Every structure is written in structure tokens, then in C-alpha cells.
Image (spheres, rainbow, N blue to C red):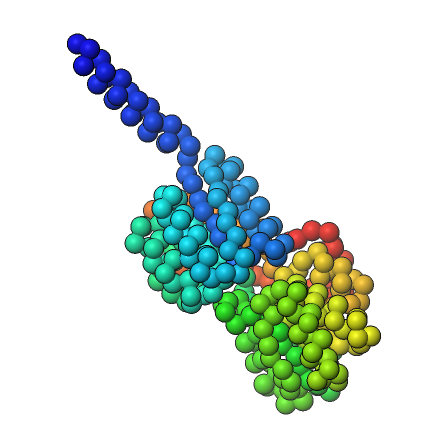
Length: 307
């Protein structure tokens, strides 16, 4: 009788544990290329709010631009048994081992803001229309510089976002021989890298006419370098639509930014994740529109918040 009672208690404990685990809801993981860019903080807040509104939880990790570390983070989340992973890759090709680990475990990956090279291993890609971002900046440049000039490009070639933004800007330049690309380099999307690189570029090309930046932090680094050199009249474009960039446009320090919406990317990413987990079919690519913000329309967007 005593043995039967002990067995009964064991069964109760086991089923009770499963009941508690079930009550905790779903667990999601998220890893972005870096959390020192406010863009990803805003996106993560949107994802976290949407997930927690459903009674579920989000684990957020920061690889700090370390591709190997990000792969390890994905593998750790797989080991923890998360239901789905939101991924913004440090290296769109190099992240492949992490994608494979999640794929083999049956854990769907939702790309947010930036795609991966091995798209077969992700369930959905929710990203800004980055080709349009580069095109919008290029077309605005043509209107402001009818005589052409030297263009400087500071990109981020290990990310699909960076590749697309710069590709369409370069396409515009290639179609107008009055423009030339004097230097193309990488800022890795970081102000701290962009500023010293721009200082060196100023020495080599003081007659530059325009700088195309892969994102707004890069543009801020460029602005600081140009100000330190007492240079003005250079067109500066970024991508993001950050409050800092909109303030710079308002103050006349920056020409334009192709504005993304990290809030909408996050919200749509969560919507796709729940549909995927419910067994629904979703589009592989979900593009989110971008809008060029310049001095002519910055007041419509305000300078205090993200879109």
C-alpha cells in the first residue's frame, strides 16, 4: 500500500510539472547583430511587447557583431527548446551553422530586418524594402546635384541589408556618368568606425559631393568628421529614420534618411511567428515599405520617436 501511495505521488508530481510548463506558454529567442544600435533596441521592444501580450516570453541575446558568438547563441537557444527564433544576422552567409542547428531541431527562424543567404533554412523574412532605400537616396541626390560629383560609399557588405541599399544607390550612379564613386568602404554600420574612416577620406577627397551611408549611425560618424574638418555642403544620406537622424536633417547637418519602421518590422515578425507555429502558410518574404525623410517633410514625422 505504501509503495502504491509513493507511486501515486510521483505521477502527480510529473503531471503537475507538465501542467506548470504548459501554463508558462511559448518561449521565443532573439539575437540581433548588435544591441548598441537603437534601431534593434526599438525592434526588440516591439517584439517583446507583442510576445508578452500573449502571455509568452522572449529571450534576447547580443552577439555584439561577433558572427561566431551569434551561432553559439542560436545553438544555446535550440538547446533551451525555444519555440521560434527571431534573427538579425551578423554575417548573412556565415550564420549558416546556426540556421542548420535550428532547422534540424524543427525550430522556425524568422529573419527580422535582414535576410540570410541560406533562405531555405528560415521560415519567413520580414525586412524593409532595402533596394528602395538605396534608390530613394540616389534619386534625391540627382535632384540636388544636377552637375554630378564624387560619391563616397560607406556600406556593410556582410549583411544583405547593406548589400541591397548600396547596390541600388550604385545603380543610380552607374546610370549617370556625371557622378563617380571615389571610395567604397565598410563602416560595419558603426559610428565609431565611420568617423575615423571619414577623416581619412576627407584627406584624400576633399572635393567629395555626396556620402551614401548604410545606416544612420554611419551618417552620424560622417557628420562629426566633416564638422571637425570644417567642411560643409556635402550631401549625406543614411538609412533608418532614427530620431537622431531626423534632428540632424532638421538642423541642416544631414540631407536625408530612408526611414524604416523597426516597430512594424517587430510586430509583423511576431505575427508571422505565431502563424507559423499554428501551422499556417506564410509568405517567405514580407517587405516593409521605406520612406525618404528630408528637410521638406521631416516635420510630418517628428524628431522624437521612431516610426
